[in-house]
Amino acid sequence: MMIPWWVVLISSIMISKRFFFLLLLAHLQPEALVKGDGTLIKKTCKNTNYFDLCFSSLKSDPSSTNADPKGLAVIMVGIGMANATSTSLYLSSQTRLLGTANDSTKRVLKECAEKYTYANDALQASAQDLANEAYDYASMHIAAASDYPSVCHNMFKRYQGLVYPPELARREDGLKRICDVALGIVQNLD
Image 1 (spheres, rainbow, N blue to C red):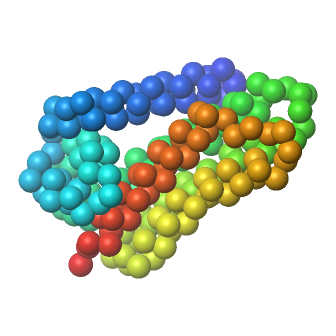
Image 2: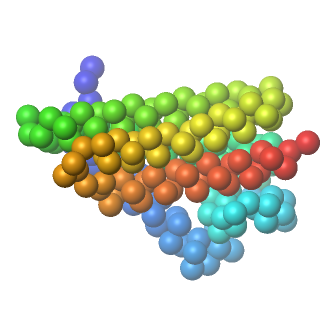
């Protein structure tokens, strides 16, 4: 069964707005999203490059209440998977919206959607690595997931006249930051 394009578009916009609101709220009042063990989350997030993103993301997840550091890494990986999936769906919907217009743009958007799917796959592999306590492999897969958006960005540069969409740049930055936080947590696991 094929999902109508407008459902995919609305879903990706809703996820995007929720994520943006969460980041905005966290930036204004990071302590306002208190659900999990604040002490462990603060200690964990201090070892990352994006404390506010880490703190707000982990505090907003109800499963963080009982999570150990490895569990917090799994939560961040899950957030990255949601971001990658949302971006892939967004790109697919943009491709459908173009119809028969500009084949170069459609080709690049389709390839970018695939890259974000690969990022999701890499993050899924890292979650399995974390479950197996294979932290080096988890780090490797998270780093790979973080690189896929750059590949997408570079594809736009190959075609003269194609402009990298600001929404895609925002999503790229978001996934890279999420992966950076997850990597920071994993690198501090025993």
